[in-house]
Image 1: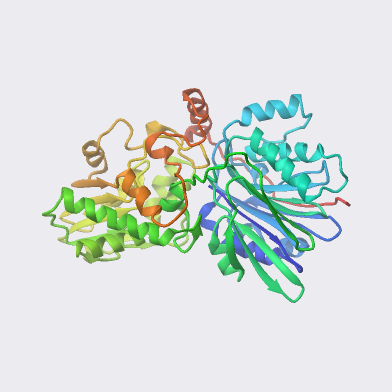
Image 2: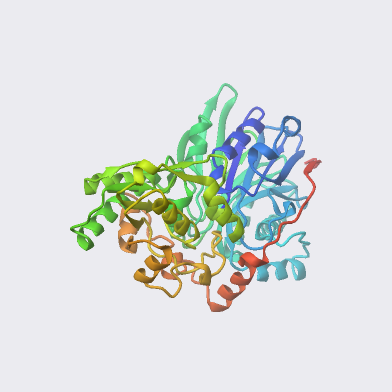
Length: 502
């Protein structure tokens, strides 16, 4: 997962971009970048590995000039995670175009070959985002105009949809022209639009999550629709058009389970209320399968599971307690790239409050269980704190298949659910009893009041929404994403100023 933001304003946007990335930091902790554009068509870029607060200092912010800009926070998926692959990316032909991308293309290799052999474009990295940028640039170049008009941009995005497969939510800038944003025809990755009225005119923002719109004091407008492209010129005029032939709203269900902040709205769905309904569904299943349960207390594994755990405890009429204290300065262990780093971070991240566990039968609630490494250690922490019995409930079904649309799930063999039934998983995790959410219940919990046609649930059921994933591709992506193949590379800081007069 990654986070994106783009703003077209009438005054400097550097601070707003910084703040918008900061509130989306949960979507990626590996790298951050901002590129701005002034009225003369000059681009200014700062990007590097690290958290937003560490990448941008006062000297960098001063140089990020302009009333239009885009930003990105990276969570590494396929390929390596060096600073050269941090975003935004830039090409100077045609016009000067910058792009930031959340998602993962599933036909990157084919597109790379086409770009080199047919489109005569050079790639500097192995990033699919750079591929996507060059495909967009090539299609814009076919218009032959010195300054593209909205219809040229929409036509180019239509061709991008035809060529690019997989998941992508994109913000991009054309120097001296404006900002565009679009989602893939399935809307797998999220993007939302906001606006605000100022004395100088209307300003617009596009971000991965609505929480960025709220905190920047913009008014939430709506989601960018699957296949849709929006374009906002430098003067603030808003244009939009559906650019896909058969769009089908099919967002990634894992956004609601784990990645998104609970105070966000995506595709008309409240993340917080979805998670509360997940808790209700779990409570109903516990009542069916364990009607005479002896649960004394429900304790969430912070932070993502709190909404579900609180509602579950209420529906079971069982005491809810906070039993783990979280160190706020340790990142999310699921999205840390190395297994050894994940193992080390769990103990640093959480500490148990003994009196909430001592001599009690404890039901721990987590949003999902992927590798099980974190769960094993937390279960042991509960036992060490004096729990008589430790039960575990997952608000999501067993994760059994790799995600190919932008979530780092390196190898099915690393999943704790791989080739195991629920009883075997419980034994592996060291719990007295384990319960998973049923997939149908999860879908119903999230989709109670929305117009979503279907969700991408591929990591649970192996049904890939784009229909182009086979065993050969899964083998290929497994090799790319294997934890053992990821190596950290030290790169120098990148702060450059690009000039492009339009």
